[in-house]
Image (cartoon, rainbow, N blue to C red; front, side, top):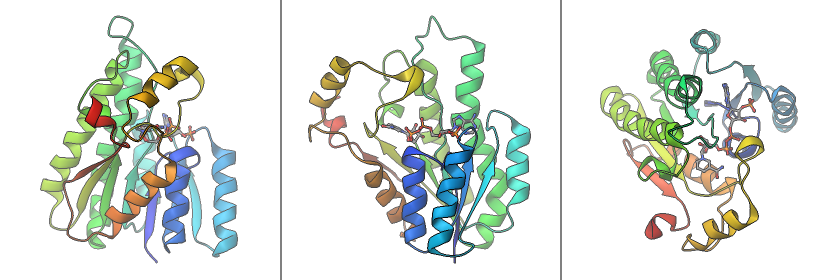
Length: 239
Ligand SMILES: NC(=O)c1ccc[n+]([C@@H]2O[C@H](COP(=O)([O-])OP(=O)(O)OC[C@H]3O[C@@H](n4cnc5c(N)ncnc54)[C@H](OP(=O)(O)O)[C@@H]3O)[C@@H](O)[C@H]2O)c1
């Protein structure tokens, strides 16, 4: 059985990726930070389908020590999905060093050092890395300065690692458009939602399953590396 680590895998898109890979016979390591209960619940439900097929690890990806602990705790790995992310609105003017550190550390530094730290284990298994990016890696989302920068960096990181870690590790990316509305501090109004939907060629949001299906496709595609697939319902046609 192949093993996949999904960062931020307890809820929303990450949880759907975990369930889909599990349905396709992967053993799942669900990484979480705050969502420990949700992670445990998902883990139990996966283990009830197949014994010893899921486990939970936790750690704040803002801290480099957590990344080292995660790396040390994993014996063997076939697939790393860098999904965890920080997203909240901040204009350039209002962004401070705390915002920079928080967003860059989680969205960019953590995927880099997880990939680097786990590369020997991945390479022993001809493994792969899939980074969950964002269509706004190419064209900026207003009022999300540091987020845009982090995702543009993650896109370049995908291509850089694909080149440097070949031929033993494939590295690809999935760039979602609008899939799930943001929660808490990033929440947006109904009128903003309407405007966003009007700009999508297919006139609707995608689903977490659309992202999970693409992750599965890339995980299984032995001759694809260095590619980033937009899953955006045609949103980029109207950018
Ligand atoms: N939702 C969309 O429509 C959309 C659009 C474009 C791109 N994306 C990308 O798709 C991916 C998944 O999106 P999503 O909306 O499901 O993500 P999300 O709910 O905003 O975040 C996913 C997870 O990231 C984890 N995380 C945040 N800060 C962390 C930290 N300091 N340490 C460890 N984990 C941390 C959280 O885990 P805990 O809950 O355990 O703390 C959270 O559950 C992200 O990379 C996102 O940028 C999503």
